[in-house]
Length: 261
Image: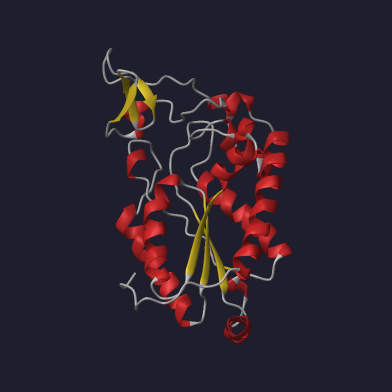
């Protein structure tokens, strides 16, 4: 059930009998010229819709803004940064804790959010809570290596195609053209360059690495509705089962009040 659809009386009834809440989290950021800026929140909210149909769990309004400073330089990117997301997620979970929630599931659509959400989870653990972060794109690649991808590539493009094809504009597609730091330091990943058979991290904005705005082995031109439907179906089924298992898991022992989130 969606919190935004409940009255305070209905919300109180839920908190009296259940201790779990699901929070979709994403980002408004570049995903290449072919894919919408809201990709990272649209997909988690789609998964949340299925959870709403299949499980009696509370679903919070999605947090659309995340940690996307590295995508500045692409028009439309909006970032609240690490501190902003940590504060926002911390304040929301702190109030849910006051209502009796002890199990938190972040349906996350953006890797840049991981550390902020993990740090919030660690604070909650000290108060006797358990927090899980479900990164859908990582789960997809683990279920089927053929689904694995990078940023704004075929994996994400296929997912959005399955949700709303109108949000994909392949007529604006640009080919991948990774930019090396130098002739000796070629791109080996979005945060790394290769040298001497090893990878070294180099701090660069995403646009400096890939002017097209997407990166990965999964070319967006390979994406299809069928790929997206199969992938999202499998990932969502896994998350539904995981949430049910999380409810059966024992809560950690409270070790303190925890720092204020």
